[in-house]
Amino acid sequence: MASASTKYNSHSLENESIKRTSQDGLNQDLNETVPRLPGETLITDKEVIYICPFNGPIKGRVYITNYRLYLRSLETDSALILDVPLGVISRIEKMGGATSRGENSYGLDITCKDMRNLRFALKQEGHSRRDMFETLTRYAFPLAHSLPLFAFLNEEKFNVDGWTVYNPVEEYQRQGLPNHNWRITFINKCYELCETYPALLMVPYRTSDEDLRRVAAFRSRNRIPVLSWIHPENKTAIVRCSQPLVGMSGKRNKDDEKYLDAIRETNKQNSKLTIYDARPSVNAVANKATGGGYESDDAYHNAELSFLDIHNIHVMRESLKKVRDIVYPNVEESHWLSSLESTHWLEHIKLVLTGAIQVADKVSSGKSSVLVHCSDGWDRTAQLTSLAMLMLDSFYRSIEGFEVLVQKEWISFGHKFASRIGHGDKNHADADRSPIFLQFIDCVWQMSKQFPTAFEFNERFLITILDHLYSCRFGTFLFNCESARERQKVPERTVSLWSMINSNKEKFKNPFYTKEIDRVLYPVASMRHLELWVNYYIRWNPRIKQQQPNPVEQRYMELLALRDDYIKRLEELQLANSAKLSDPPTSPSQMMPHVQTHF
Image (cartoon, rainbow, N blue to C red; front, side, top):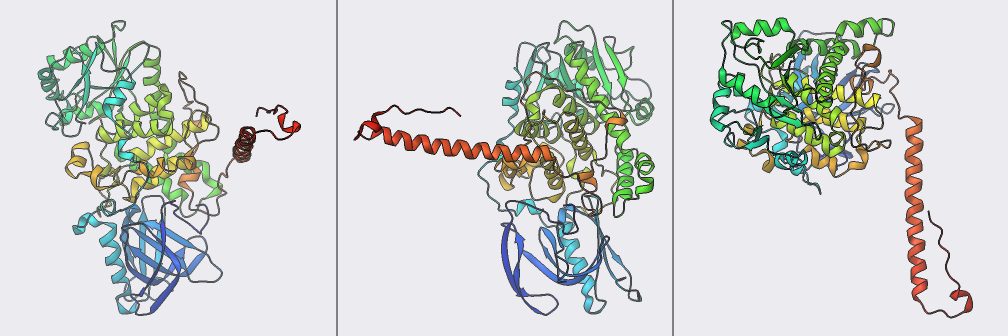
């Protein structure tokens, strides 16, 4: 991925030769293969000039399917290939007009969600640009043209069903729930209590469903406090919700106050419930003007409130834009550190990690259960709960455990993937777009750098998740909440990303992984220990030396392969040996005892 010969790799891409008459009217016998997935169809192909920001103009042929834009160089001295899922495209603009005279000044400018821009120059005659613009716009933004997202057309088959990875009852049972303090409620089984919550919720045992309805009326979007995770020994819990609807008049709700007390009392050793409000305090106060707010000391006597100063989705969006400006297409070496600092991206990563560490530490120490919320409880809240759970519970540091964590805390609890990513939507300037999930994965990567043996998965696993966050090839990240996915029958009609990953796990494994059951991870969240994720943010730039695989890691992989080979040969020898032993001896030498050397 580091070179201009950019390849979007997938083990399940099927290569097919395509013979057809091109849209330019030329008969093309394409001996070269163009990768296609089952269910993927070629829409058009066209000769273009790709304005490569690193190597200058390159003549090539672009193929547009209902899933991807694929460019192959036609120049003998360039092996350039671009393979871009259309879901990655954020914006398509026409550059130049009918009067443009400059070389390669007439064409299309394509902005992508994965930190790159693509520019294609086309001939001015014969509506060449218009055809390509209309085709790309139609298939990159299918929802605006009453077309299905590609995930609903994808016919890939895998030997593992990723939709079975997460079962909420099994995950709660793994945590030892329900118990005499916590119970499962089915009050939301038809999503009537809260449309953006999952059907199954874990709540304090002594709270009735009627109590829950009254609490929902006082919480933004009816997102009541529910359990995410419980400590296996000290029984303190991580609970998540949205802000209380206090408003400017400082409204109180006795049912909500009583409910938070019930949460605190699920652990008799705790005299206080700790509330972490992810927002800066000034924002929480400002939210009162729109009917929101926070838990005041005078209303919630047995609670301690702390603000974590994590900024909102709009600040994060602008910060990532600044990162994009400094990493693509050119990296300004002479001002790199000051440029990176001006984006504030690593400062935001630091604040998210710092907040999660506070949550994890409070629970791990057994000092108190923790309630986490932001405004609506689906952005910063998901970051904090999932990262704290990753620090506390080694199960989530395995490949399937991490998939469960994402399914549970992000997908089932209603992080608005459709709104934040804009799947198939042409409105690139939508104020709801924000890189909240990317930020979470970045935090996970930072942790994996500090604890290189603690995670079963490798960097490729994290990058693959981010690539398919945008690609629309799988149904995993589509729509805003569980109820919408059920209405669209997503598990029945689409393939899960986890199907692809879990059918080829070896590719995503960290060779240094050492399983540790009770280890709590506390990453260092100081700026000196955080770094920009070069292999993700700057992977398209061939001039930046990528962080190649660690030579120790490469040697370790070679030794593992050698070990597997020796074990295989030993097994073959033992089989041959046992076959000989089963034959009747014909000579004294064959009657000698066989000496086996243990490997």
